Length: 125
Image 1 (cartoon, helix red, strand yellow):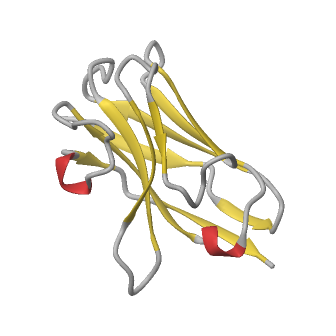
Image 2 (cartoon, rainbow, N blue to C red):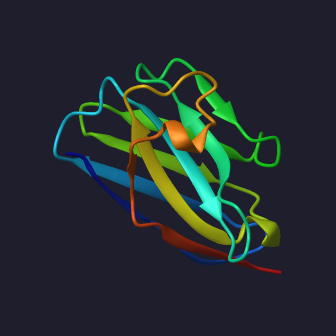
C-alpha cells in the first residue's frame, strides 16, 4: 500500500509562487509515474503535470506550461510541483497521484492507483 501526503499549499497573490511537495510512504515509488491533478468545487478533476518513473519525461497541461515545473527525487520518495506566475484560475485543491501502470502522457486520472488527500492553493487577484 502506498500513502501520499501533499504539503505546501496556501494563499498567494497573483504573480507569486508556491512549491507543492508530495511525500510517499509504504513502498518505493521509483518505478511509478507521478502526477499532479487539481479540482475546483463543482468541476471535474483535471490533469496538471506528470513525470515518468525515471524523471526523464515530463508532461504539462497547456494551461500551466512554462509556469509550473514537476520534479522527483526517488531517493527521498518525493515529487514536487514548483508553481510560478500564479493566476487566480490556478486556485484549486491539488492532488498528488502515483501509479505503476500509467501510460504516457500520464494524464489519465483513472490510471493512477494512489492519491493524496489534497492541498488547497488559493491565488488572490
